[in-house]
Amino acid sequence: MDQTHINSVKDWFQERVVYPNEHYPNYFDVLVLDDERKHYLHIFTGWRDGRYFYDTLLHIAIEGGQIVVYENNTDVSVEEKLANYEIDADQIVAREMLMGVL
Image (cartoon, rainbow, N blue to C red; front, top):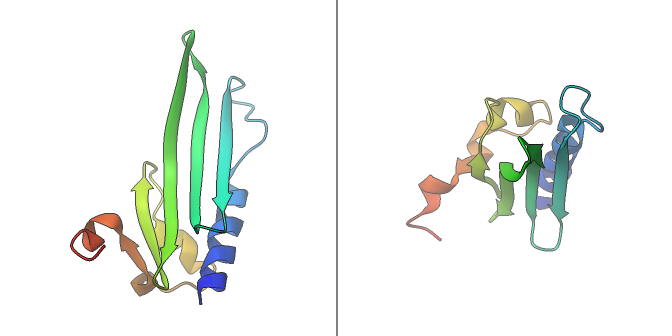
């Protein structure tokens, strides 16, 4: 099950990223795909008004056979997007739901 989740999350992340971004030439999408620790991040970084910025758009991990959403700073529903990869919504949990469990 974990490998299916890993492949689905990685495929979705790689589809999200646009290189280069024609609308924001000074901005860059960065993917961190850590298969050993099963953490996956989509980071948005670059220069705005002469200042460097760094934002985590998505941070997802695979833990205990579930997809754990640590951070979602997008308007995208993780459940809806991963449903396209045949991942059931009940296999996806928000970090807040695990606070007493971890």
